[in-house]
Amino acid sequence: MTTTTDDVSGMGPLVARMSRAGQRLRQADRAHPWVLDTAVVVVVFLMFCLPDLLHGHAGDGDGPRRLRLVFRQLPPAGMLALQLGLVLPLLWRRRRPMVAFGVIAAVFVLQWSLGAVLRADVALFIALYSLALHGTLRQLPWACGIMAAGMILVAVRASAAVSVWDALFFLLSTAIAALALGLVVRIRRAQLAGLRDRAARLEIERDQRSRLAAAAERVRVAREMHDIVGHNLSVMITLADAGAYATDAAPERGKQALELIGDTGRMALGELRRVLGVLREASDGPARTPELSPQPGIADLETLCDGVRTAGLEVVYRTVGDVEALDSGVQLAVYRIVQEALTNTLKHAGAETRVNLSVVVEDARLIIRVRDNGAAARSGPQNEEGHGLVGMRERAALYGGHVSAGPAPGGGWAVEATLDLAPEGGAA
Image (tube, rainbow, N blue to C red; front, side, top):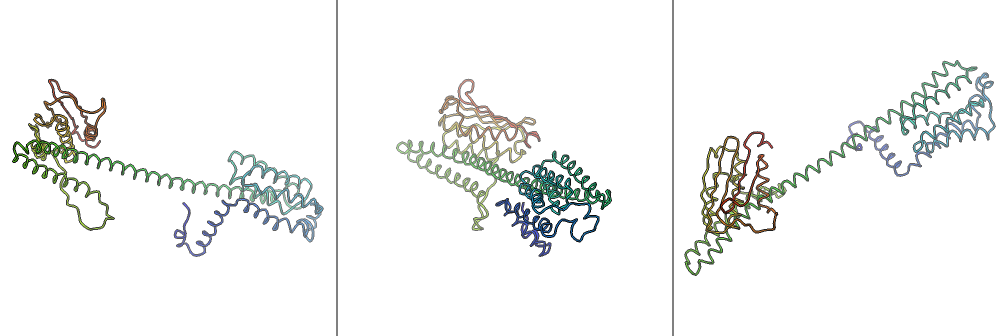
């Protein structure tokens, strides 16, 4: 979650420029981290080391006489060695913050033990800031203890020129400020990292939900297409076979079969247009709104039975209970289950088969029974369910129900589906 120019444009041109400069600096630092570390060392050397080398230390020159008496003047070579020991460890202040702090603290103690004062001592505060920002939190108590000991040493050595308590107040305040600044920046970066991680996870979850919704929609469309195409094609194939058989014996029956094939095909085409019409995306433009028709329900079962009767099945259909008051979703599930069961009977048992179909509403249950007197055997691999039976089970499961199918006692094939009409079942 990086801040864009649009986000900061309302804060003023100065803040916007500073934000863009900060972004470019962070990008360059990630690409070449040694550049920034080296720049820090160079800046510290030029600002705090070079003046001591050119003009002497803080207690020399035109300073107060008591400071010149307290602190020791080092030769240039010794001063340069101590300055390098204080400044050069800043090169690895981000990769090894505790090591850098320890080395600088050791040089700092050595310098003050010799009685010398250098402006390069500011490197110790920079190292403490870097440790608070980049180091582990377990290292901070040790670093604070070392820092406090070093500050006490400085206050004691400067006690001849400055009050110990004044020196301690100034030094410890500076150390606490460096520590607090490092912790504040660390917490802020952690918060930003958490926000970026959360945004990334939300994007992943959004994409996953989209893919799951698309997959569920594909399954639903495939199921609808299977129910529509499978049933109507089975009817058309049966009518075509009957028409071919009757062409020579009874031409008028062959003509009637062809007319029924045309009617069934037009019905199937209309249902396909309805299903595919709702899938048309808005990007297709307002060329033409598809002609939609209501989803089929229990009232359409009689028409469905008439269609399979024309294909040669003898269907006896009855209902028990107030089936017309059922929810439209339940009625669609009942229609598709019955359609698939009759299609399987027409496909496997053939014409001249008697089918008993009943839809019964009992309290909070709906029972669908489809039983034929055809051959009980069904073609297909052993222990393998077809798409139709799987689709029936899925539709029943939407309402907390189940489907059983198998050979019926006394011959034939039986399909029984039970749907739960209780409110919690429908919600499931």
